[in-house]
Image (cartoon, helix red, strand yellow):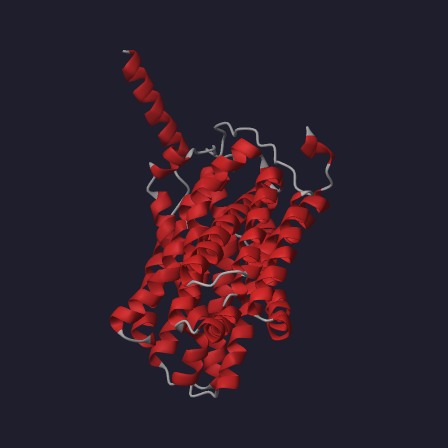
Length: 405
């Protein structure tokens, strides 16, 4: 088999290169004002583009597993990288919001999500005993791509202008993702038999028949909403609630990127050594304290940055540990498709915070809602257990016997 002759280091390196290229889409905030300046569009209208990208990204994960089965991991990642790069290159020619939404939103988001979840799941399948660490390495590379390209895209915008920046950005990303795909190999998964630990591989249909997947969805939705809402308004919180000047509040943006990445590495690795659910429970406990502090405590520079760092650290850890938990609960054979279902919590979480804030009218009530959901998710994390595989198998066996009779 082709996968037997590849060194594990090349698999990891290829995935890191791919994920770094994919993570560059999180530099979108750099493009909002320059696009407004060039086309005289409304800032809010331009900013919607990234919401469309996020939704398309999450939506793509529902189909990525089936596409991987059809085309294989290398061909799918290479094609996704080509389409992602092409979408950015063509964005350099847009002159209307509709075309921006279609190219930089729908096409870029769908290609990014397809490559993201399949490359992540494939690497986890190669290292089943180190799911947390490997997931941490992969999603940290995604965050690192965003951090590095904040400087690259800022330099490009200032030197060649906004439209040409799209062109060069697309070329670079296409080379990274397509090039990284050449180092990937399809993981070979032998279907897990029912064993002493009652573990097996669930299909999507079987997974959706369990109550555990819905509990995991609620937890993941809460984790994503807490982190994504903070990322979207952290600078404004610093100015309005902590009375910081704009320059000081802007430092929180860099702090989020740093602690987000650190959380992915540390909590991902830790989850291989202790219970992943205990790690998740701890992150919900810390996040609840942090968001409620932002709601009820008189903020100063120190308290504000401690809360921001804590939320970012926990968000990064959750994004890392949840793919491993889905593998623990439902097996690795159908991981891309199964995690794709749970991952829809990311897309909904991306919007929920903004909608709640608009409905309730501010940061503080929104943080109270998030804090309440974190407490609920903490309780779920304490009591949830993997599906009772033996019971499920017995039920299926009884149904089969009944049909025979």
